Image 1 (cartoon, rainbow, N blue to C red):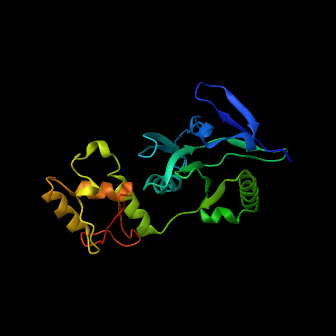
Image 2 (image 1 turned 30 degrees about the vertical axis):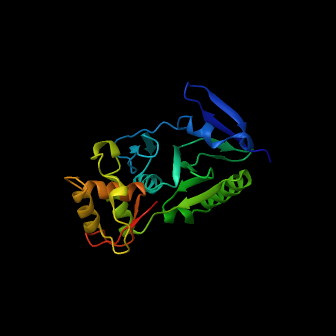
Length: 231
């Protein structure tokens, strides 16, 4: 069965093509398929998130989608993010995924964000199975995301407050950090302080966000958290 896809180009028109011809770069240069609207009394909380990956705002339709955006934005793996990227359909179904993520190695993941309880709805479950099969045939991964460990999410949300490198001291770079096995947050701050950084904590937290430093974020983040300098 033929599967087609429609994308909205930045200058206004809609382009339809076979899914096999759609590239991630075309999607990343398009605009969201749906316009995000808010209304009084709605259950979901939509908005715009400024992404350090794209250097621009990315729309989301719920707090759960915002949480998935944070995980896409942190670190170095993802290099492109598109929200509400396109409409895919065949003779019987229509589907707009939540996100397209392009990784640095060129691979693509399509993400659908759904609360776990909604997966118990047979119609939703069937639609997501179909979507997964469609994207797999295209050579793209498909993820159904229902949430994350609360401690991990809390740490990622906290670090997101330090994602804007333009607001930080330019002297704070990972090269100033000692490559030692017992390096901690407090030790990294001391090393940057000795390198001339007057307020090193935001630098360390930004380096954690950007992937220049690595830590176990499934545990509470403290001054004693062990760090690894990433090349």
